[in-house]
Image (tube, rainbow, N blue to C red):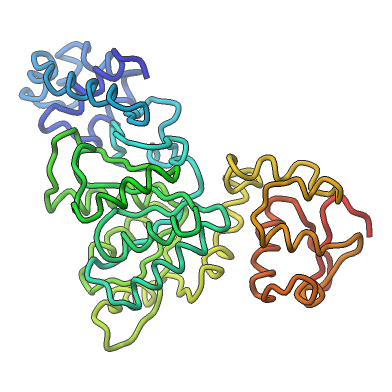
Length: 385
């Protein structure tokens, strides 16, 4: 991102009363932030901008805040600022009505363009809710999905921790400036997310403290980045229901875990299920629903960084042992022969549960490592029957 271009976007984003919806509308008439800033006053009036906004546009340069941003960017090479016209800016975010004009972040920016599942829920989660968030997130990252949440207490934190427990990638979308970690109890977790290859992002300028209205606003980013949203636990009027509604409006899947009818934190999930959310009891339920989307979005790879090398020459039995699959995947592949094998035989050979082998085969099939044959039999791709 060129400094001058970033400066122009910073100037636009710092204008009071000029929101992302309006800026997105202006981009239908102008090619860049600079063009908007340098536009004729009469033209801006014709496009509906109010006089006070035009005055700010022409007179305020916000040098102090802009310099503060550049100083922060220079403090650490993993700090970044993505403007809406940047090539690395997530395409999914561009499609929503109110895309963040600038995404400030820390960590690996490439993670934003991986296949993501949002896992959200109550801050006042039950022990069962915490366990479910951890377990579902741990499961999903093993199949190459990135877990996205909001770094809040309760379900959010448990989902991030669950992803990290299996060495998975996770994204935290926060409701403060990037120089503030909120809640402070999750400071260590935030550092672990970054250290483990994930990232933390925010649309808010440096120094912006948490405010109640920020949390539902950031939820649109969480839902937009993801193929689907899993609501683990939610009260009847939970902010997680806002995330679910936004996901539905954005055309993404909504999943909900049912709970006890006596648990107030399950009422939101039950409401979602009644209105069309997909009831899920395992991570495999989610993966089965989004497998086609994953396949389409990544062109048969779930995580380009880890899988690109795995799929090359996967049919050659002499070379498959050199691929960097995890231990269980490699164990399963080593049990496969030159003829199609049923799941029960593979179960006997490798000792893994049949339901796990089934989900692993789905993943390998998406990667074109194996081919499914009639009768539920599997063969390494490239082998002859």
